[in-house]
Length: 190
Image 1 (cartoon, helix red, strand yellow):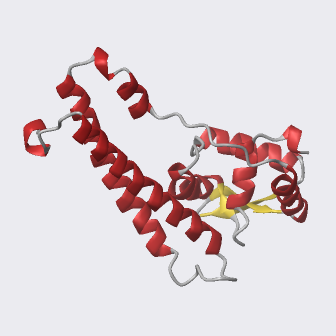
Image 2: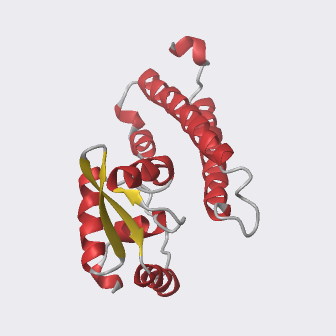
């Protein structure tokens, strides 16, 4: 089965393992609140494409119902979906992450730009990192109380902690690069 499904399908199955039925829109919201920090959050159209594929394979159940005069479809993972997800996790190597880091790509060829522009790019990245830390910190806080051993959000909390450490390390490396480039400080680049 794993050859028939892309990784995004397994990510969606994983988002449905927390015991609730979700609409495609709600899956997109959950993906934006979780996946975007360490994976690509799929587009809404991709979510619906994968949900159809998962339903065709019997891995999710689609339940249509009326909601305020319009028809809404909610999805839930099936026993077969749980088994497919367990099999994928057990039999597919995690693999080494592929890093596509636009800041590092630009820094690699920083000699082709003005030094002040390269430093400004790094300062801009620090602002983005601060925002990511704040956003993910909020997600992490929302998991408190359901994150101890045996609780449903134990593993998402571990991922959030990992992400917070990653973003903090990125900030350290960015500041180190700025210092190496002789950055005069934030006031000179503002």
